[in-house]
Length: 296
Image 1: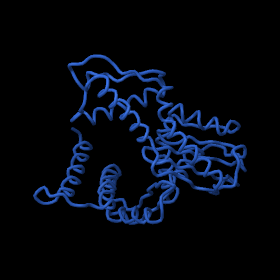
Image 2 (image 1 turned 120 degrees about the vertical axis):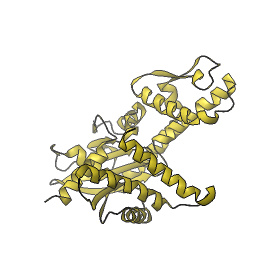
Image 3 (image 1 turned 60 degrees about the horizontal axis):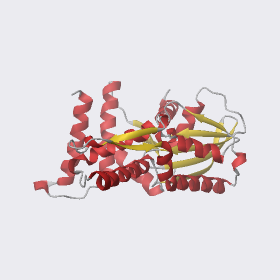
Image 4 (image 1 turned 90 degrees about the vertical axis):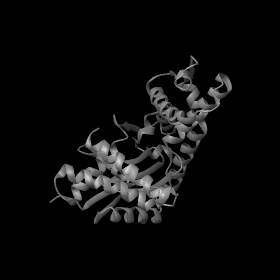
């Protein structure tokens, strides 16, 4: 295993030991402590790559973060050894990536839809004289790609039980989670895919099929929640759908065809922009922002 893998395992083991405490007794550990360990790991790897000590950092946070959550993030970063810390809203970081070295039509009103693994951020901003003026930041901290995974997990778990007699998954729960993530990704490019039953019981053969249409149907409540968040963002900004000029698709969740169609249905007159790797644009934008504020 390479150094990265060894270090990652050591970080996880360290966290487990902190939680278990002495003599395997469980104890509480704060979110700040967990976050600080992860941020310390990032700091160590960045310093190894740069070959010098690094104290400056830009950390992106969801638009829906409260002041308390931001303060907790700052505390975790300080515990990790960072001293000059800048928090940057994820939608703004993504906007930097989208507009980097590209012309921005002056006077444009832009809606940035960011569906990540655990949160949804909807940011509306106006571009005036090469400057971004935020009009509204709206989000749902309990809606993300993992919710779509959970729908698939429950769907297949029920069918494995009711139709194939697999009543308990035991050590295969993690396997089912990974398979459901794979199926979700497959349905981005395929209209049909399946789950292999023998992956969960070698004595049984066959597949459980699922279609893109079926997946969309069972996740309709999640799509409704995303639509409500978009409508709340428009309400907060006093804007109508036809006043939005551009839609920026951000986050791994925006790869899903049902999400793309949802945005097209709500904003049929806007220009829709999606990068090849929408889950990377926040990190790319944050890197360029860090360069702009820390560079000589």
